[in-house]
Length: 595
Ligand code: OXD
Ligand code: MN
Image (cartoon, rainbow, N blue to C red; front, side):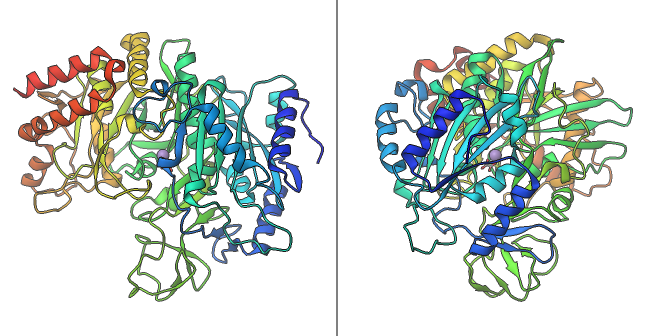
């Protein structure tokens, strides 16, 4: 297929990639509905996609059991020196990595079509948007990209003859020899998977996986790893944050950006349905926030994505009504169970489990089965515009002004429900020491405590010590207009293992307290770890939490915090002389306050 673009650099790169990968043909994606339908029909015909009788224009995919999540230990930040990638990233010298990967890419698309996907992260025309071009041999990736980003000819028009783009080369790494029947989910074995980033060149090379963030390169690879490096150079921020708008009964709007590690309820919070009278919430984004200082000196955020790639298990009308309403139609499901009447199902779905289903591996399943019906990292890919609480301003070109940053993680003990930073430096300290118990979104043991600064450990495209410094630099520029910073833990349990906080919609009570802090309506008490709500100022109207449980939920466990200081020191020591002195100073202050 002839190139529809007049961009010389793009055409050259596509030709070079085709010469290396040797596809049977090349297809430039125009982003149309017709194109989406055509690829889906092809995948239904090949057996890769299963149409769902119960959900219009929706399809189920089952991945290979070896290809079910982001592969963090096969993810590389390939900077000229290891120091530039820093201690939290895997590193291979760019020359060596490219040579290895070229070996894999050679002929890797034989028997397949090479799709060229022009996409925009951010609304086309936004001063914050960036254009990427993904080359892939996976029609599943093309359809997901249609939902997750803005794809097609309008992007090529915006790119023009000499516009800049971020090249993203992807292959599932499974050439199809003539006469061979394709498998339902072709991919390469784990040791051949590489998710590589070359931040100095703004380049992404991904090989061997067809799943999620490994393959939909606009998301984690571009919008976080490459964008974080670009943002540092250009003086803005690319963060692993949801964005939401809260409006109080007087009509004042607050914009909140919140960073949590994977599978800590970000999508739920992004679509929260407040239980407090008179407050309204709107969703702007559920995973990534790009933020730039606007002409008035405040920090403005856009959601670079246009869809939700949400964790399915646990999502229900009970936990997230808006997510359930977003996935009624036009949705791609991956690794969910299939019910006998042609719907999807997963653990934590509303109602009773089906008496029989087909599990994510394609096997018969009943409630008596020992294994889960859906993979714990099963996903839905749904257009953001289908969300009933999407903000009318979610695609505003200039973004929305952020008032509040929230950090947090999943902690069964130690950390209270909410506390506020004393100031920006203290907030950066909170972000840099954030910790969470691991979940199924990342390969590795589930339930270990991992320090996950700013929820960016797997997503920071350069030395994390320099990233901390960038946060200080942004705070210095924002001065008094900087967002206020809070830390939450929805997941605290009693010593007997009982959840102490109902979470979900009730988290709106905590958000209200934050907004009231910004609005100067409530006070706070000083504790060694930060500012906590005054007695009676966290709105618990209508909740029946035993006083003893609430006290435990809000308890600042000084000995437990003290016991974590050595781990914080160890964590900071990893960054050597790249650790900003302002962070060591904050740790000293914490130690002093803990006494
Ligand atoms: C995601 C993740 O998929 O953080 O959003 O893993
Ligand atoms: Mn995420």
